[in-house]
Length: 136
Ligand code: MN
Image: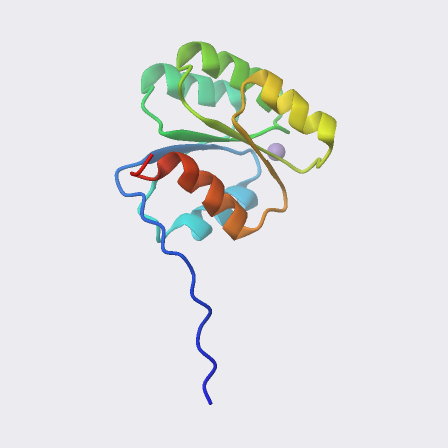
């Protein structure tokens, strides 16, 4: 008997734009691989300053995935600045430090959600869908 494939939810976010702020190129690549069949349009900033510049220039991202451990300017600072430029954009913090104090600091900085690395694909998708789904 053939074991049926585990059914996975198909996410479709065509027309949505997300900005991934991530200095680690392998992690960034991983995000693009995980998201490649979702139709979402991905932009990449390697630094907090670059993310701020993108937000000033475009201001039309549907969501920002923010690494907290960034060189020069950390993700908290970048998020606070971005929130003054486009206050409505949801920011999901992603950090390798799974501490309660870390989550608190992310929320204080203006992040809507918190994703601990390494993350599960299902958790990432559930978080993204909360903000990118056409039904919301
Ligand atoms: Mn990093």
